Length: 295
Image 1 (cartoon, rainbow, N blue to C red):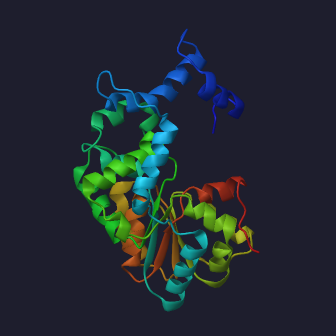
Image 2 (image 1 turned 180 degrees about the vertical axis):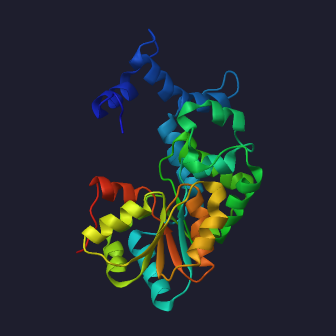
Image 3 (image 1 turned 90 degrees about the vertical axis):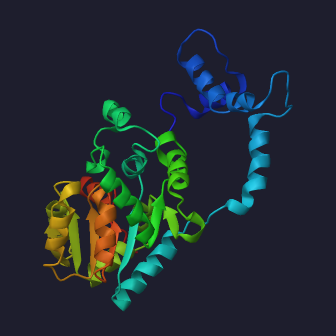
């Protein structure tokens, strides 16, 4: 994603950008500087000179930290574990962390609720309203109970960069957890036939505010496996949602419910059923942006 600059323009700025009149190019050059070389400069004492650019320093740092690298499970590996859970009729939860979940975990630890609530781009947060310290701590506990956790690969401020800070603040044992990408729902659809297999062979419970649309969509596609649909009015409705879950016979749940999906998936797994945070993949099916891969 390059916004208003092409890849060639970004490369030009990395080579020849300079601060000057405050036009777009100058602001981008300043951002490149502040995101790299300015950080290096802040670590040097007065009159110190380090004859390396930030790329060289990062390369050396990567070598030093290579023992800290954590493997993210592939779509094929996640698929295998979900199918095993289905075959063995046991609980298994796959949850995903996006900006909403990360900000929910970070609020009043790393960033104030006021900052979040006054930033128009952060409003919504997947149905989670701040401040709510009790639910924040519940999310942190829940994350440790999930079988697989999807992390954002994008190293932007409110994605992986903030999650790294959150992980330190909560002392999450990342090297002992099963981790994957937060795009695992899309990757399962693009790289495997998992969803087709489940819809063809198992009873599926759809949970989320577009679940009824989803049921109609799957029926039109020839899948008659939807055992029920449940709406999720908000994060505070989780208890009621779980009461409804207990009324259905199903083999697996697809949950599209914002931040609440994390809690719901883990609670379903405790009932010996596999569940995945389906996210906006359902919206993409409904809009035609994605199709169910069946071969």
